[in-house]
Image (cartoon, rainbow, N blue to C red; front, side, top):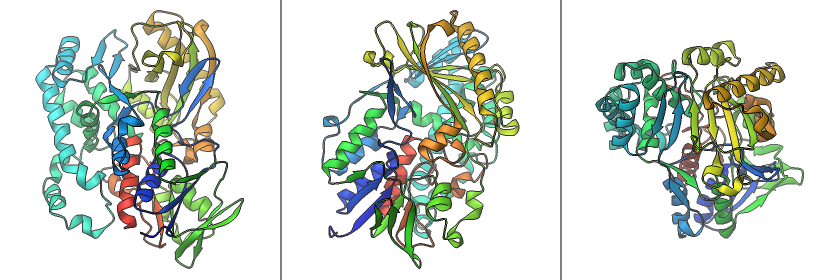
Length: 491
């Protein structure tokens, strides 16, 4: 591959960085243009009054996809990046006083559920075996390859997966499937929660998404040394060592075409020519902003799909340490169905939301002053459709503080040393995620996996797409896989 071949990448999110690394390894000259003054997109950090916060994704699974990038470049991953396995993965708190530790070891985890809920450990074992089976059928076909190329369906392993299609449980909801495995409502709620990993509704999303527990339970969950942002910094360092050039404070105004072929991009510095362009920007903004003058190329049906849920996050410095809490903590709603009804039908926030609480200072002590903790407090909320977010935030804050204070037996409000807030509006403005949705489109239909936007344009030569809004989906592992698919398509 001659060095004259030039790839231009729009956006320095995790998928854009990974795509840059893969193309640089192939011999391309790669330049990345980022509107913000930092890389990482949602995967960034900030500091406030002596507290450090990872601003976005806080769960790290399937680290092999990060390691693979270093190995492709002939580097030793541990020279750039380290992480440790979690056990337990997460602590769960229910309104009835039940506490669950989600242990990394499947046997230990099953025994924990049996001890705390009475649900038999053998039921958990069967459930996780089903999750593993779904993974074995879908992984190589649906996650690691383009679903929009004929050759994908002409492979023998694809044919075998098609023959086993009924085993992926696509025709009933996650919730209905989980009810068939478990009798205890607390255990059903536990496994329903995995729908939120891609911003979906367990009462509507297909039971195929019950593959997600396998990704966490089998492959494990990890804490990166230095926090989640260290994933970004390590990959940017790797990309730089391969000659990738990053341009910050450089928003792209347009993808420049000549007839049906990419010619480059336009920024404040003018037109930059390139042989191919990869957009790591949300697919909605890619078309409606960067390709706004080419409406004939817009996939209107895809652009009008239901968006995933968003998030409301409070970043609090806490002047106290809670020994009963861990890195990942979940405080469940007493009425899960009502909570999702509010998010998806009423488009507002339930008064008793499920709360996710991340405390990275449990593993990285300098993330908070001595005797203190850095709290990342998140609830799932609808995508922005013009709601009165200022009023919703006030109510949500009060309800969250009351719930945490009640379940932890200590008034949280006077312990908050500082506060920062991220809501769907600011998520959209900072990361160009349409309506503040975290995962692009939702997965609330049986064939949602097939309806996501392709990684390569069928109408414009030299135009590719990566990131959470396109195939195979959102979250760090899938974003990294989108870059891998793009790299294979470029060839």
